[in-house]
Image: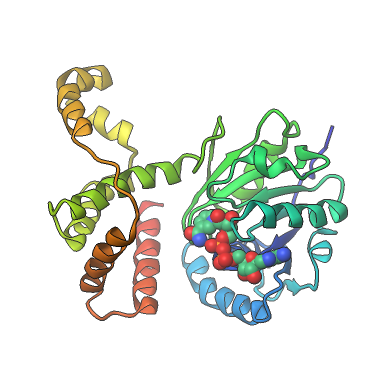
Length: 311
Ligand SMILES: NC(=O)c1ccc[n+]([C@@H]2O[C@H](COP(=O)([O-])OP(=O)(O)OC[C@H]3O[C@@H](n4cnc5c(N)ncnc54)[C@H](O)[C@@H]3O)[C@@H](O)[C@H]2O)c1
């Protein structure tokens, strides 16, 4: 039986693109030593820049612990060096099974016996990811939301092959860095939160394609309406409150027929060329000339303000 460490001081990061660079920022802020491997020629420069930008946000959120430093990161030349002294490894390499499998061979060969690997994979099944491991008990799902240093949610999943205590260990690591974790009990493509996003986006796309509302108005309908409530409470609790005190059973009895009629009228659009064109035209209008960087900065500024208000 694997005995996982009491505390985690060293984290290995494998893959430092959109997600890995953000994870590196979070773990550094939590006071960890980070060893990072990414074969891209600009990985060190890009990651250092990412950390520099993320640090003030992490500070505003109170996530920078005493003694933490953005300098406690080492950029290493291979996978083995990133994981050989780690107690916890966060893998964030491209979402392709064959790429993940190849890297797992290199990770497993160098991994200390009591270390755990978590994959950021958005939608691959853990059992498929475990297939290339000699000892599949040491990899779990630790799925973040972009950007992981700001969005609190991490979805945890293990299965019958997962080491006893692995999910509790992963939960302690993430929650120790200020994350909010949920346990996914069953393997399904997209886990929980991506399926929820996909269900809402499917309808958002169809409303645009059917001409019911513009891209911008559908986005507004979410951010000025239910999206605001969802940042405070989840849909089950909100509808239970919507019963006016009659509870969830009362809500189902009162509004079941309405929901059935709405669900029965919904379509399953495809993300084909035509959908891409229509959505793209709508987004260009909604952007109103603002650049990618400006919009990303606006998203992060508002996210931080919301997180601070809700803390
Ligand atoms: N982008 C998102 O919104 C998001 C959200 C949650 C989870 N994820 C998951 O995170 C993972 C990474 O996604 P991303 O968006 O950061 O992708 P990305 O393409 O931005 O980054 C992948 C990085 O992996 C590096 N890489 C390639 N081969 C490697 C190797 N052999 N060893 C180490 N690094 C290697 C690449 O150079 C690149 O920097 C995926 O599994 C994805 O599903 C993505």
